[in-house]
Image (cartoon, rainbow, N blue to C red; front, side, top):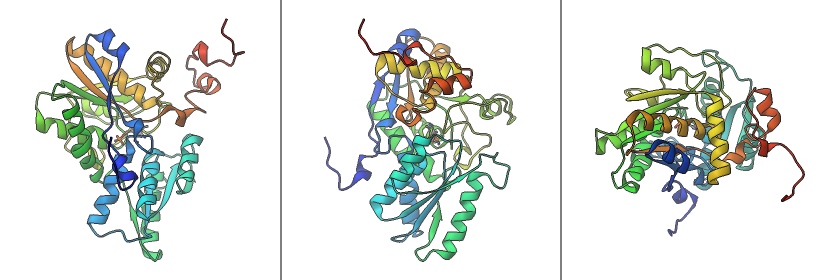
Length: 340
Ligand code: PMP
């Protein structure tokens, strides 16, 4: 057990959990890094911490200063808890379509929310672009100033994963790791872990698992950013090469449909006691594909990004699943409780 001066020390150092069914079905050892155990219940606490520490080092933040960000939720939660612990304020611009639970968690952490319609990145009113303009405005008018966290293009995000997540994976596996794969939101996790692991061994295969509707699978297989369709997963699915993805190239790429990701999330909950969000389903599906491609006997690590309670009203709601034409598992239907 460790003792920390504040909550920031509790970010990271998450365990690897062996995924039983995925391992047994492939003959590989597949592990999920339990990022849902971070204090903000997601992988994004790390980005929040590194972005704020980087701004402090550069002298951009003073006590009472405002941190502004456009986020699907988890980065906002990470930034807010870091801001609370260090005496800053947070203003979060979030697309209306994100789950109510994430919005509630943000408000609970003291963030001020600006909810905006979900429009594509090329639109000037996209939430990321709006957050940048809001940060500029607040930097001029707020007495203690403001910064834009800019998680997509701020490489402090990737750096954080390179020096923490990758090192933890390397030391927890004792260097016995053949592959790493995950999905991309900003690309901070994937590009950062890839860079960190490749420093230890150039033989580790790096994979990207892309949800339907994202453009990176197409980019890394054909050189063209093309996308079609959409996904119910949140926090992942990128349509451009972000600053964090610059210079990154995967060795393996696959595309994962919602049906497959959702089935895996439900199986992990019922069979293995892991309550996770949809992006973790895409990641584990990717790890299984990579294991099949590499053959039995390999060790592959992926990320269990966030905790499932954040999606109770969507992914774990039969009406929502039906509205998306996704199968509803029998155990999820309301029924009389009983043991017969
Ligand atoms: N899963 C979830 C639930 C997320 O919120 C995010 C971050 N947006 C990711 C995965 C992807 O992480 P990254 O931004 O490091 O690519």
